[in-house]
Structure formats: C-alpha cells, structure tokens
Amino acid sequence: MKGSFSEVKRFQVKPDKLTEFETLITTIADDQRQQIGCIDIKYLKRFFTIDGVKSGEPPRELTRIVKCVKYFSYWEFDNKENYGKATEWFFKKYYKDIQKLLIMPFDINCGYSIY
Image 1 (tube, rainbow, N blue to C red):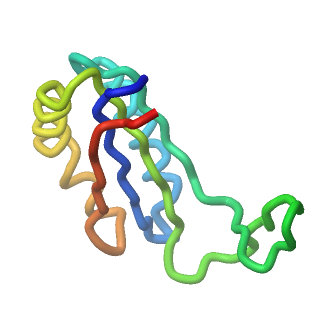
Image 2: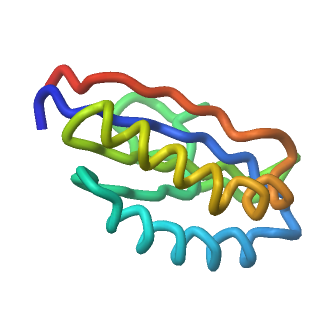
C-alpha cells in the first residue's frame, strides 16, 4: 500500500536456538496481526544467496551455518502513530525473549512505502 508505514527487522539467530526462535515468532506474528493499524506481518528465513551465481540462474542454497541464521520480518501499518504504539507493545512483551536467542541485538529499519 503506497504511503503505509513499514518496518524491516533483521535477526541473527544462534544456531542452537533455531527451533525456539521459529516457535516464538509464530506466536509473535499472530499477536502482531492483532495490533491496531497492522496491514501485514511476514517473516523470512534466509535459505539462499546469489553470491557466485551467474546472471539468470536461480539462487544457490546455503549449505552450512557459519555464525548465525538470518531471519527478517516485514511489518506494515496504516500510519506511523499506530506503528509507534505497536512497537512499544512489542518491546514490552517480547524483547527479552527474542534477545536471548540472538548473537546480537536485532536491527530495525523503518519508513514510508513509496510504491
């Protein structure tokens, strides 16, 4: 939706905490969808890379874990005010549970969609 306010988070999950993280984000995503103004929430697990792939070929599957497994979330809202309230809720309810599964604090990028 053009003009919506969105956030992208990057999580770097400890290799021995993958199942716990995926179970937790299933619960979190259900709760995130219920936040006022939420348009959508999606989570992605990085399985593939385009490093070393020739142009036009499909991405190459990752075959080993080096330091962590990366996950991304995309959370979209109708406006930044509702996003702000939902972010406050998220940090109060889930921040500590998530952080203990990560190698470092997650990154957050947010802004208005342009298309």
